[in-house]
Amino acid sequence: MRTSALSRLGARRCAALLLLLAVGLGLIAGCAEEIAEDTTRYEIDLSDSPARGASRPSVVLVEFIDIQCPYCATALRRSTDLLERYPDDLQLVFKHFPVPAIHTRAMPAAIAVECARAQGRFWEMLDRLVASEASLSEDALVEHAEALDLDMAAFHVCQASQPPLDRILRDQAQGVALHVQATPTSFLNGRRIVGLPSTQRLIELIEQEMARQPEQASDDR
Image (cartoon, rainbow, N blue to C red; front, side, top):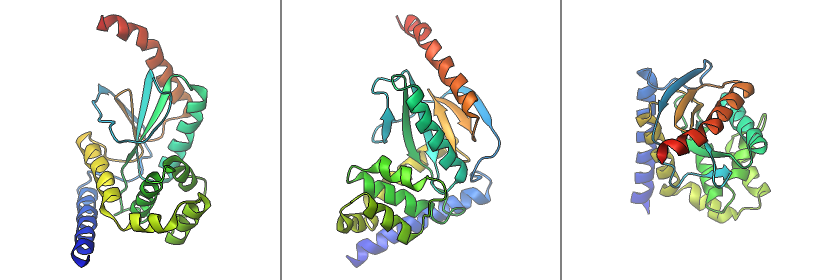
């Protein structure tokens, strides 16, 4: 048991050191204030990633998120509103990208939502954590879990286990491979968007993608 605990601690320290090095080299910049769009379409592995919205979407919005980043919280709330606007066309996919060297509660928050996911309550926990002025302290994470009526014994065991950390690190590694350097970074049908564009700009981009679908289907025949 002690060896396992030390291994988990070593993995977490390694992840934190790698991210600290990336920040120091300017490869990861924390929360993004400036907006940038990329016309390149990137291939993204969506397997094992939480998703909500349309079951057969014409537009997929993938968001790499640091839960403690205030711009990320705003991005997630906006995306949820857009799901209501485009219920049959838009799907939101979540990817972890905590930067603990900048946001010290980002990794515990990410682990908490993964442990809620293990009990089928990922989105409910995430929505609570990105609510305006939500606290991410350890006591607050426990209170959120209790409010969702989670099995608290299982929740605490999960928090100390390796699988949630492994999933978070996989998302981070994928983000680095996709040149994610700041959060939020989103991919709209593979097109990268850095920062927090206006709601109106997101609507424009979504509708451009929706209009593109008949053309794409014709090209595929």
